[in-house]
Amino acid sequence: MIPAATTSTNTSAPASLPDGGTDCERVNTVLDQLAEGQVITAEDEDYLYDHGTDCSPCFDGIGKQHVFIEFLNSRLGRKPTPAGLTQSIMARVHAEMA
Image 1 (cartoon, rainbow, N blue to C red):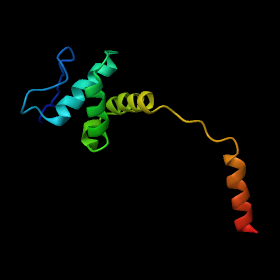
Image 2 (cartoon, rainbow, N blue to C red; image 1 turned 30 degrees about the horizontal axis):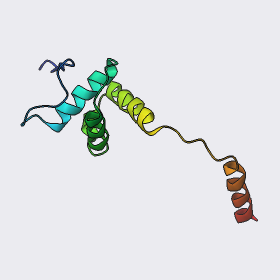
Image 3 (cartoon, rainbow, N blue to C red; image 1 turned 90 degrees about the vertical axis):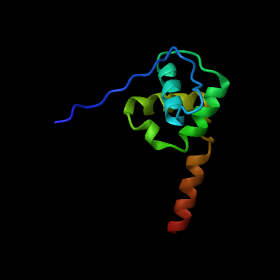
């Protein structure tokens, strides 16, 4: 039986990797920094957002997904639902059914 491979990330290192470092390694470093409550640079925020929307393997672990979702929520914010949305939808549904 082959033992499971584990990896660790040096979260005290800058998130920018030297040439040859992979995109996913940088994402993991930034996510680890966020998970530990460290402040990341605006460049790393932009990189994480851009790469995260294109690369699902970076977020295979549920913990990484939660960190990324928290990051997105803080970056994008939430807009409130318009006051009359529910009534408008229901009126359209009733009109279609009539």
